[in-house]
Image (cartoon, rainbow over all chains, first blue to last red):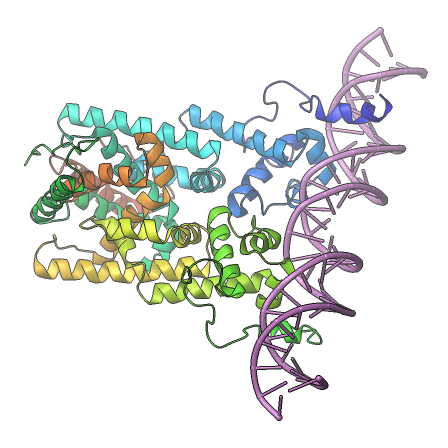
Length: 253
Length: 253
DNA sequence: TAGGATGCTGAACATGAGTTCAGCATCTGC
DNA sequence: GCAGATGCTGAACTCATGTTCAGCATCCTA
């Protein structure tokens, strides 16, 4: 067991303490936080900025002010570090810290702006996670989706939102529309010539409120056209459709 | 490009023929297409599937049925190949082949479905480009944005769309909402339990049409609240306060 | 104060991946 | 038929990057 003696110290139980001894991401005034925490934070930041694959262990070590070897000492491997970052972020997701992301659905307060400002690194990481197909992305979306379904149900119950034939699809569409403003933020900002993220939000918010208040179309010709076409397609595709497209019930007008 | 001794044969004029001798992406029945075209197509496919960084030249060569050296022979370098793929895609963008992506804004026909089916590889590449910050992504978004602005203007002119105070922001919001259904497609499909992409679109489309026809809110209370708050913030920001905590407006309860 | 655990490092190691290179076949024009 | 251009390959080279390792300092404990 001579060869395994030194490495056993690392790989087998890399955590010096219990659960998460590093504490929250940006706690601790400056650089007196534990090296483990600094490494995790640096990784979160760089992973979010450039992606996991494009981030080197050496770059993380440099940003954290430690040697590359220490990264491996604490987390076993780059993958182990990634897992630790994921677990950290997932814990925050489970704690509901990113609930404001659904605010993009209908910007009624500044919660989203606050989130974008205070958790920029985490947000970048999450945005990336949503377009990878990582476990973090899956869990984040599922959580936001569940929240959105609840919000919509409550709103419909209270009568402030139009009822829906398909509340889940409704939740998904609205959630996606909200998240899109985040995913496509750089493009949108450029296209609108906005100075910064907040400036862009100030352009976007009233438009979304108008859209959700008045709709877009001045009458229902597009909906009628679509239904006609869908019915026609359903009728001509095959005589006995295995999945009836569910005739759309009349909506609240 | 600097040490132009032996590499001049490759780098400087890597194209054996003129402009784009490889022809369109999937033309040519099976494997009798030129190797250059097969390499480009394989690269497009893999770049879209895994990302540029995660795709190796060796994998591209394997998929194209050639040696890694031939990739470099034709395109000078991996970056050169990437540039060629970008240029190919950009040409298609300029030719308006992806205009149906704006269809997501308001699904009035099957153009988007057709696109998703026939150009799956290209679409994956473009989706990835939109979330990187690549030149292709920028140009694609700009093009789609310009198209969206035109569509909206025409619709408003014709009276089928509500007029807007800020048509560009309106175009951006609608474009983003449409693109979101593409960017978040895997998540949405999972959350809705849809069988496939088309199944998901059949759930999404009527909801979007309902949303754009009727709106979401049953009255304008949220818009009024937001305006009130915005006015208040505007009035109180300038005198001195650096950051107003902003009282949260009434939410959907 | 001795001894071991802990935190940490510099230097080396191994591998994966982009790239280079010398040469072989095939085709075309003379 | 010959010569050069063209298309293409296997093998080797180089470098970046993840990882290992032996050892040093510090701190806690008996």
